[in-house]
Amino acid sequence: MKWKNTLFLIALSAVVFACVQERKEEPQEAEVVKESKEEKRLRHVVIFKFNDDAAPEDVERLNQSFNALADSIPVIQDFEWGLNDSPEKFHQDFTHCYLLTFASEEDRDSIYTPHPAHQAFVASLGAHLEKVFVVDYWANP
Image 1 (cartoon, helix red, strand yellow):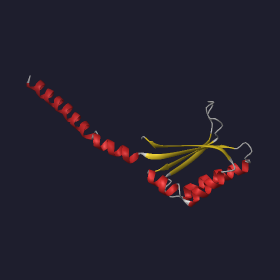
Image 2 (cartoon, helix red, strand yellow):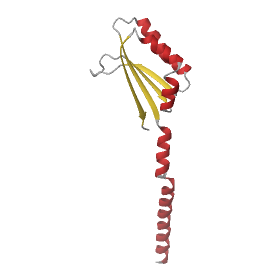
Image 3 (cartoon, one colour):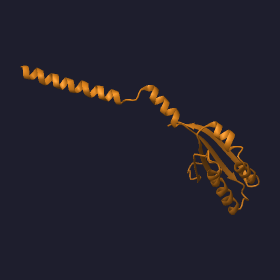
């Protein structure tokens, strides 16, 4: 009988120890909130619909110019782009999509937007664009 009690106590101790260890490994709520805020990034989505008469070489030149902004403006943390490939009929003839990432609104508003390279790029678009659509949002991790 004593042997069964000892075995029971050992098993109970092991379960309690495992629960305590698992609890220690769970991040505290404040830590989770802090990490989430640190991981959030400001996304800047720019979508173009070029004029029907825009020459393909002009579109390619403008595309390369937009891509080059990531090398010219250090607050751009990430840059990617692609062509519309949606089978849905909601694209409204927008063709080129660009996604830029910033750490803060200040980086976007005070450094990127007024930057001479960005301003020159924007000025070069005028005659070639029919429409532009821009959405900015804070990415949730």
